[in-house]
Length: 528
Image 1 (cartoon, one colour):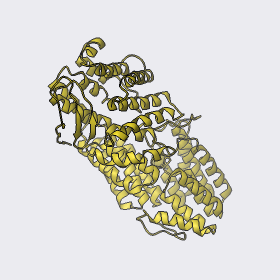
Image 2 (cartoon, helix red, strand yellow; image 1 turned 120 degrees about the vertical axis):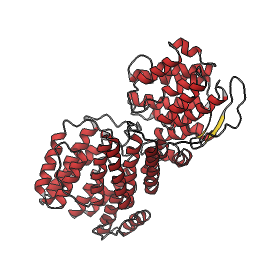
Image 3 (cartoon, one colour; image 1 turned 180 degrees about the vertical axis):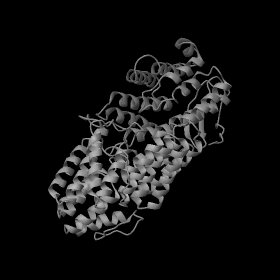
Image 4 (cartoon, helix red, strand yellow; image 1 turned 135 degrees about the vertical axis):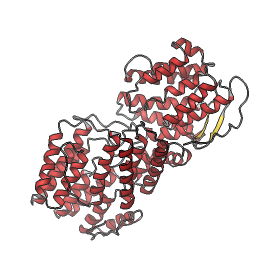
């Protein structure tokens, strides 16, 4: 997507250019450097886009600056940061090292081209990041280097924001489970946000730092701002929904992600990984399903069909399987279909539940067996935040993916038991499933597994005549995933059956505030 560059307000024609830039569609920042004016304009836009993880767009800007001023070290510094996701990749140094080699033959030569002590500090930091050692060692070394630079320039917003990001990267590398590093990074980013609310890095890193159910309320203001200020970058449009989804703000989740998908689609070129489209399309569909806008959800499936067919990328095909299975689970439009042994876990789950609901217990048993066969070989799941490097879960005895498969197996097995009149066994299996799910990373995205075990337990308890227990479980599900439609519906039914009309009315009012599907009440049998 081509966006016009707005001229910097003032660019003094001297060695160090004071640069305050309001750059169209990418936010506002100040990053004085030794660049010549033309190179500085590209550099500023590159940095602004880099803060929003718009890798390809940022590379183009940094390379334009290099062409205009071949010895401008900071243009190479910026480009080195565009080839790896700082939060959830192994930080492959190959391409960044190639970029540095274009600047100079060795570290000393490259640092010598940095015109000021501050610029030398930035270049030295990426020399550590792309130097020797494994990913963990290099990310920690980079954080240490950025900490030194921050101590030298504590009032410099760019030093502060890149230091905050280095902490988030090191936190992921060190598997920090205390949240202390994330909170520290978030505090630094919030300090910049107070000074410059339109700083793309500040708002972005606040969201990453507080991207968990406990801290998400701290990031809501930044998310609202970020949703508006960087319309040129797909990831920036999507990222606020990490906070919106944890508040059950479904209109924003759905529509913001459509915007993100469309920008990603516009920028996509053959050979690109469709990451921005895949992630935003996935979460966007989830938003439509929570609204009861099933037509909108079907349109998202069609978008994934286009993406899988056009990109030929395995990730797109995997995401297509996910959104198809999720649609069946959320709409309860049960559909039994042939399933290959290598089908996705979500496809098998949707088929298994569909089989039970349509009375085909033989197929349901086959699906349960398929899930059982995968439990010990499932790879750790990337989860809802595969692209965003969210905070890690408490140390598991098994991989997250293995836990997810185990939960799905218990869900199908429980429904089979219920269909055979074995309600107590069904409740016991689902209780076990909830205990497993509670050891996983706290929900902070689209439901994962796609049928939350607390919600299914509530439904089984309600059908077993245990309305009070069901209501309690639905309320737990809603604490874990605020405003989730099926959990609200279950809570309304359970509270109604338990005689708690006041609470049922409160939950009904909440559902009515966003639900666009068929009207639902505590006596409804088909909310589609």
